[in-house]
Image 1 (cartoon, rainbow, N blue to C red):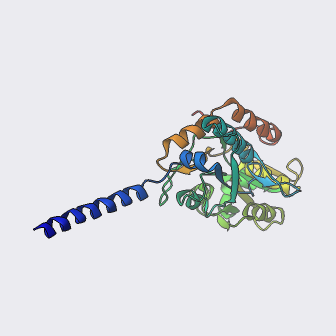
Image 2 (cartoon, rainbow, N blue to C red; image 1 turned 60 degrees about the vertical axis):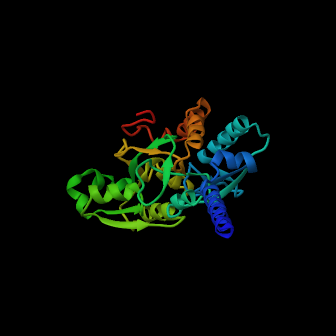
Length: 286
């Protein structure tokens, strides 16, 4: 009798221990808890999206995303009462941007990420930090072909694969000859294809077209133009964040809504204003 009672007690204790282990292993630290513990902020940045992020002539990362990361670090130091927050930057791209956030490799990803429902990934978005829209880079001598809808059926359009811009182009121009560009240099390859007359137009968000053309020393005042003047879509960019971490999202949104963030974006838009005089029919606050 005693033996059976002892076995029962041991069994209950063992099961309780297993449950405690399972529950403790299931509960993962939040982003803020981990940063407070380790002092490390892990960021994913696509280094090929001028002016959001790019490398200068010295190989140093520059752009809106880096400025935004510095604001986030400043807020973390104040909120967590830490003097030092170390940053580890991972190189992201169109193919891995959602995965590295979902897998916990990075705490957020900054890039040209249109806020939308993302299937097959457990991620969320911050509030929008930047607004742009779809335009077309074309040679000035071919601009009429894109403007005139009667000639659009045979036009050759390049676009980055797996983007909202690809979805728009396929829906808007179902009869066009569409070429997809991929990889880290996809935008540069598409812009070069327009320059070399391999395609008639390259579609992308206007601010990214401006950045790519500028980096390749293409003249948007003489040989090429962005059409239409007012972007045809509204693309609100948000930071990709882990799903179900409200405290982390609240901190990020607080930074995005700060006057300092608006000054950063305003400075970058000031550089682009002589080429992009019209905004898409939307705003960050819509």
